Length: 217
Image (cartoon, rainbow, N blue to C red; front, top):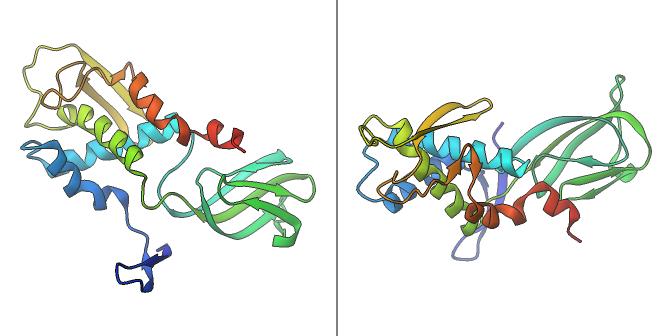
């Protein structure tokens, strides 16, 4: 489903546009930032996808704007996977799929938290949520991780380095191997130790993590 977003153009006009795919939108900028390499746009795109999936796993949230349908078991509070929430299309409860009208739940759109007016055995929410555009520090963190991963997914880079090889496995994306240091033309400094983001990257990402947002006032 194409998600439509209201945007203010440079001349101050309000327009409704399709929400872009971050991976497609950022590819050229990432390659320019990276420098003379990568020579392989397909590998760069794969590295960005792996970086996004790895960061989303660590954040315990999804970042791109799109429509999602999520089911939560019995709970007094529903924490959605993507926020801010642009709008809720429908919320239903139980196996009978009883529609819960908007006046019977409270939505914290900034943090993606729904508090139903009663207790339900299960709730299914269809909504549109996510970040657009990505904040600059978040995008730079993603680019940095992608730069570390790029040599492992490109046939044109990282060959014959003699460096120690590490593996990162990301659900629904795959497994990649990469050199533990010196990758990405010197940009990588063991950024993904055993699949765990470095302290520097974690510090940048911490404010976007689910537990940080839920705990915020």
